[in-house]
Length: 382
Length: 189
Ligand SMILES: NC(=O)c1ccc[n+]([C@@H]2O[C@H](COP(=O)([O-])OP(=O)(O)OC[C@H]3O[C@@H](n4cnc5c(N)ncnc54)[C@H](O)[C@@H]3O)[C@@H](O)[C@H]2O)c1
Ligand SMILES: [Zn+2]
Ligand SMILES: [Zn+2]
Image (cartoon, rainbow over the protein chains, first blue to last red):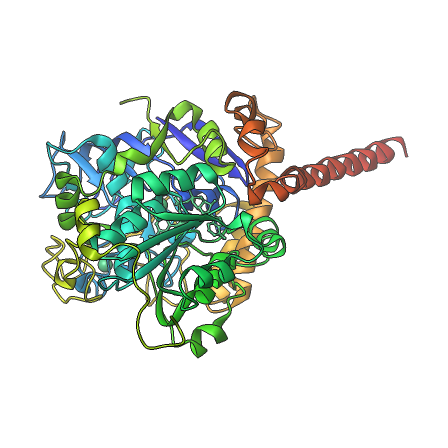
């Protein structure tokens, strides 16, 4: 089968790989019909996540058709059209039993500090991902759901991560009616977080980025007030000015490990890998939120240290909330929102790229060329 | 204002927001928010019919975090450890917990050793590695126009990308040159 393969930092290609096989009685093999590249994949692509092995296939956002099921699978059969949450989870451990599906303890042998994610390095379990023609799906009775007939494939693939994560990010903000919500980052996660904040009753939604085309999207897709941080000497001061010097009630970090806006921090983290991630956006979040406010961190960071201004968070009495999104837990409610038209995920798709040209997709998305917001990947076999 | 007790007024009232934004406030009630409260005990939630999953056979010795009691019942089988990078990785897993920075730094060293070795080996195949991939889109997808005159903050460090990408290749080429020269000397001498 054809699959995207990691060769080293900044290097990927498409190769012939052996078909995945059933390794466990509750596995399924899924033929991928649509996949996506996520901002998280860029951290892998840039070599920022430890134990990313040459030969790994990335891709944790995908939908497809069940090709084969293991002997204990009861909920799925060959031919079913399924959407697969980016988390791999057992459904029965201490964490799964409490709804923390992104923190499952039975699926990641390599680390206890993170659950398992498709195609996300050995640090996240050593599973191959869905930017390929076929993929192994563990716990087929637990993770995947049938795609409802009314749902568009592009909406379904965005529900496997980006939409669920943005919506989850807004929830972790504990938004109360009339709250001022600041979203850092106008990528897919930030756009969906901003849009979701309104559903939770936000009174004002502000989005900050430095890419003008993405801010334009935040204005018309997410009804947000926007600011380009590159136009301000100090964006934190500006955030104070526009909130009557109070700060935002809630700040959502939808940027993560490769945040820009400070040359030294960006280069030491993203280029030289001396920090687990660039702390710029998270520090802006801590500084821009009001005392007693909440910071919700959706941005991903590596396991090594980052220079976070922790003292300020303590002294301001902040609540810091964060996690990988437990995707499937969001689905019943999100299906309603998509059906009602309150959330329209596929509006942010800008590029549809054949699997054979996935290296182009990574570069376009990484360098933010051609007004790219969300690239989808179309496998050959589909 | 921050200096007095009341919250600053909103630019639009909540009634105006409800009228303008589809779905405004439908999840105002925390009961409608799927991740509130954070933990909800419900072992039947996920469709699992087991207390503890059946164990996936360990066909090859599988490295694991020393913070786990045992190998997890299900694990990834992509890219088993091999060669020098594999030895480094196995050492990192066996000797250092995730709490130790050495664990992660060794894994990063393993990554660099593997990517160096596999790119060198690729030159003995029909598909030698390129220093970076996807670069043709700089031409086909408006590389310059996407960057220039847009006030982008990241353009400042983009010139570093070629340096970051090419430095290991210069080192590789240097290594190959030194090795070749040493071999040639040996043969002559
Ligand atoms: N927690 C989760 O479950 C989860 C799931 C998916 C993605 N993520 C993470 O969310 C983050 C965003 O993902 P994405 O797909 O939207 O990526 P993306 O790269 O498309 O978006 C990031 C955006 O942040 C902007 N940005 C950079 N520095 C900034 C700064 N200092 N302030 C404000 N904006 C800044 C960039 O210009 C870009 O538009 C990534 O770190 C990704 O790994 C987390
Ligand atoms: Zn993702
Ligand atoms: Zn579990």
